[in-house]
Image 1 (cartoon, rainbow, N blue to C red):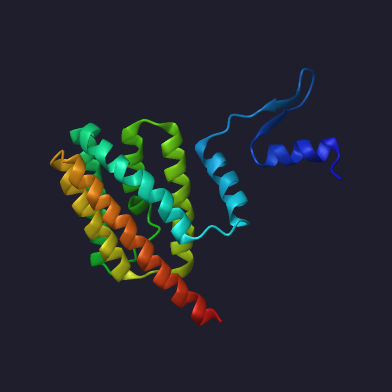
Image 2 (tube, helix red, strand yellow; image 1 turned 180 degrees about the horizontal axis):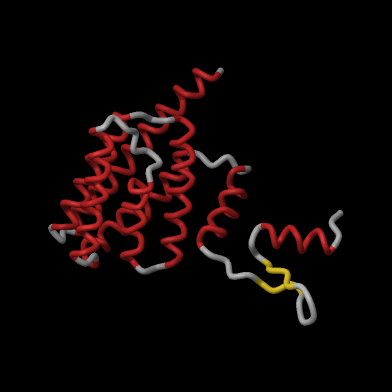
Amino acid sequence: KYTLREALRALEIIGLLNIRKGAGGGPVVGEVDLATTRDLVTSFLHVKNVSVPDLSQVRKLIEPYLARMAAERLTPGEIESLKEMNQACRDALGRGENIIGAEFEIEFHRMLAEACGNPLLIMILDFTNSYLGDLKMKIQPGLEFGKRVLEAHEQILAAIKARNGEAASKAMLAHVCDVEVQLENIRNKFKAEKN
């Protein structure tokens, strides 16, 4: 059993409490940011054995909507930032680098989520992309997968630039479905090679 001191220390370690010393000190509820929340949810779901299809089901519900909202709401400057991210991906692939797990590959989706302005959707997407990013870093899908991701991001961006929410939504759904199939195939091959 935990003592109160051990319980407070555990809550401090995970960022939910701050322990202040001295007169007037003691436990103070900490400000929980997106990274702390994501890490807590990730820790919980790791023991639940969340699968790629589980994550994809959530992404299929949310990300097409986010792409539609982005087509309606992103500023020209934000669209330019997405274009620069795609260019960074293209440059990395041209050098033979694997873009999977690169910050700009994940940031593309994060920017679309931020366009909706809903902190709950942003948190859910941040979690799913972080979880998928960890999986991709583990199984290393390779350059061909990275090229498919870039092509999909460019199709989504073209629809957003055209302010065509319907096309952006369809392109995002196709992308999420393709990533699911590709990652499941690669993950199954990875598991078979390890056994």
